[in-house]
Image (cartoon, rainbow, N blue to C red):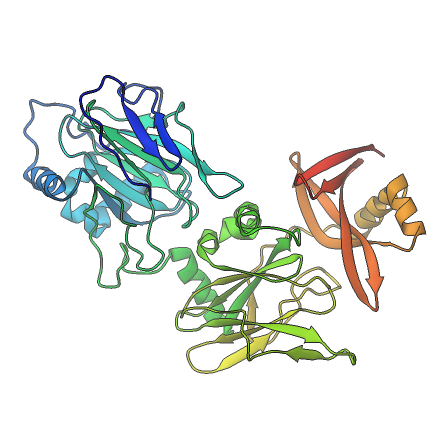
Length: 458
């Protein structure tokens, strides 16, 4: 969180961000083009002639004694929730029951699974919500010229946001025309409570477990139930093929864009273990279990040699882990040990050469989200098209091989078959280039610019 700055007695209001101070366009304009969903009745604070409820007055007194603005984490919600469902969830929550006036607040609905409330300290302050994203180098980029919503003076807001538990997709700014504060709505990865921010008073109602809901992420809880029902000790998912030179930020972006990542957004909160490889996996233990990742090699006899004396990573109890590994599709370069609170199971994340799905492993539940399979005719037709391209033809004449990966790639809205061009060394296939085919459209992957380049029509 960045430090908030206060500026008094000036006609131009600036809000300070990570890399300096930037003017917030239209921050003092109540109707700045943003959209809102009104509360269940008139918004709190818009009628100054109406006396504030005693609960709101008491909360604002607490805010003024402890900070400059109030915020609360209400709980995890479905990213597809309707307005009615969110208000119902609020009313049933402990925060909503303690502060019933929140049901009158306007609702801002962005992509995400976290629901927050924001209360300005008095009738003079307005709250503006701006969209935010993360750049390639992992820093925030706030879109200050396109506010999502600017509230009326004193108006309370509810905000649904944050598909990722690592990055927030909104910036909150509040002002009374003389002073300003800005912050992001995020949760601490250690406690599950709101991350501390200067000037922000946390009025969340926390259960004893430390979570605003008193329970874990509902998607994670449901997955763990599936893992347990299958009789497995842990869950494993193949997320997809990645560039072996990917950075941590690259992997988190790939994860967020993948179907597995979208189906299980809590994985964006998992640590990433990066080894040499081009395959990305996720491992989920049960609530009491742990995941340990060990390095593994292959002897001259073709047998695995695991080094359990030097673990690459050992997770906390219940912690999911994302692992980049496997330069070869025949051998895995890691060994995973997952405990279930009692016993332990060892396995290697690897794909079946037959269908591109996870290789079946006793005690491991496959929760991958697979693309619909293409028939053999479609794969062979695409391969024939690729073999007619000069650069591929020349490479194959020099001994390289073309392999269908069993995976797909979305390019320009089309679902394309993904192929790899590489070299076979002693039974290990090393991928060197990627190509994708969608009907008669052929693309080559540019690893430098992370871009699919059209190669023309067949």
